[in-house]
Length: 166
Image (cartoon, rainbow, N blue to C red; front, side):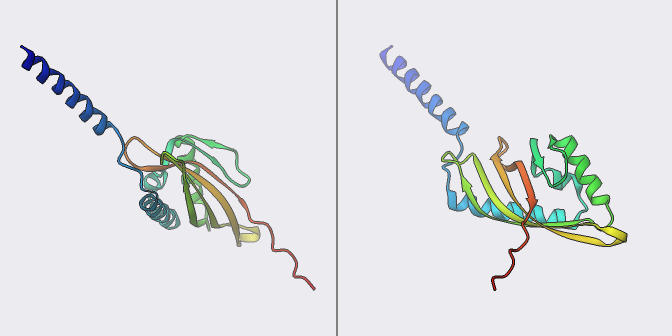
């Protein structure tokens, strides 16, 4: 009887340990995650620049993402973001590309932020196009499906260069 109780306790402890291990995320490696996040963001920027696959472009944002862009109302959630992306890509002359850098992570590895620079081409006066140079911050979250997703995306226009000193 004592052996059966001992085996049962061991089995319960082993099952508990296996459940804990299977539910936890692998150890956070900031160097590996930095490379992964920069690669994922570059892939996203390339997709947006090509401007053909709306669903794939939108998939990089979380369902509850918030976008704060120059001259635009705040966008919240994928339906609004999807409509914005569709409208942007249908705008004649629209083009966007960005480069992000210097990811920083929360201690638990579940959040990250990066700064970046964007080049945005939009319709200008009299049928011309205008290129805007933007800077921004994106906040990313490690989602339950094991993917980084952008949860906050903010950009504004870069300031004009200061006049040259005489």
